[in-house]
Amino acid sequence: MSKKQQSAGSLKANRFVLINDEPCRIISVDVSKSGKHGHAKVRVVCVGLFDRNKRSLTFPSHSNVEVPLIDKSTGIITSITPDTVQLMDNSTYETFEVDMPTDEEIKSKLVEGATAEYWTILNKKKIMNVKGS
Image (cartoon, rainbow, N blue to C red; front, side, top):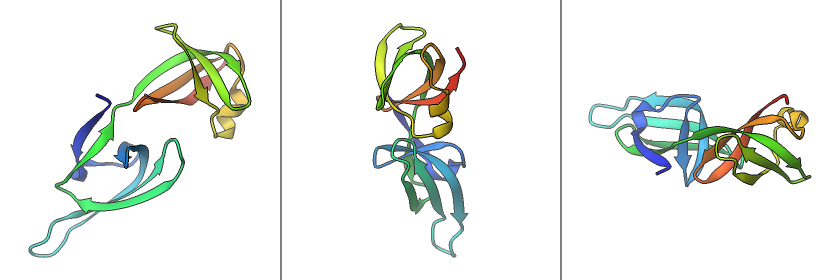
C-alpha cells in the first residue's frame, strides 16, 4: 500500500498529497470558515513532484484525501546517460534506472560513484539529493 487516507482539514504546507494519482508537495493551505449552515472549505495549492505542474483544489475540510507514503533510500550512481541515471540500492543491491533530475543543482553534483538519496512514490523513483563520493 503506497497511499493512505487523511482528513483534508489536517493538511499542512510542505507535506504531500495525491491529486489525480500525481504526488504533489503542498505550497499553501487556506481554510475558510463558511456561514451559519455551511461547511468549512480547504483550498490547497501544490506542485507535482514528477511533472512540476501547479495545481489548486478546493474541498470540504471534513472530506478525506489521499496522501502518498514515501520510501526514502540511498544508492550508488553506477552510470550516467543524457536521459537517465543508473543507481544501485545500498541495502538490496538492486540496479535500476531513474530519469535525469530536472533541478540544475542536483544535475551538477551527478558523478559516478557518488551516493544519491532517492524517493520511491507510487512505484516511481526520483533523485532528491546527491552526496559526494
